[in-house]
Image 1 (cartoon, rainbow, N blue to C red):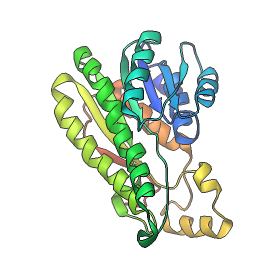
Image 2: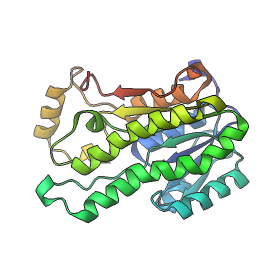
Image 3: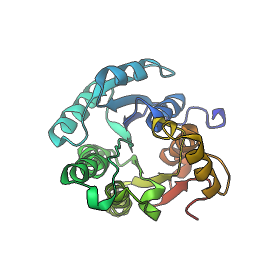
Image 4: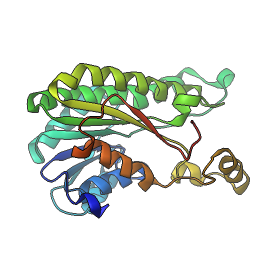
Length: 249
């Protein structure tokens, strides 16, 4: 990634779910690009440890349940006081509570929608005013190919991720006049804690459904996000880009 040098020098980036998996890869990529990164996660100690391990200086970790709108506002205020105005937001926090439709209870539905969809709303709303005043900002929502294709046993997860697509396009239209861009990335099957639980037969089945024949790495998603929040993507907004080895084409 050194070809881009430090294109985010002087900017503050907030990454939710930023202490592990795709979120950690994104935090690392944005730090390498020169940003001061606010790593946000439910586990404050893990967020602080992740921030401490990033390249460069000026990073910090924050404990936050993104489904809690009041806490999100508090954290954004803390970030701005410690690091400066947020210019980059990556809504990556997400959970699963999988089950077939007939066994999917209200709590599993509500919890997934609260974190995956309302969480993105909470954080975006909290930073939007500052970005608009700066007349500069970049937001990336991490959706999923499941939100584009559906998946048995994941009606709640798919609904939350499909909702992010509509949310992305609406925010992009609302904020474009203030030079605030909003895009989404839709990862396919990426090597994370979730896919680590799959057995060899399940991995082989997945690979057979992926045209490129393999699972992706968190860095594959992080590289695209780094591009989308940087100056080279200044004329791109309202788009949903899959990082899935060709699954959803």
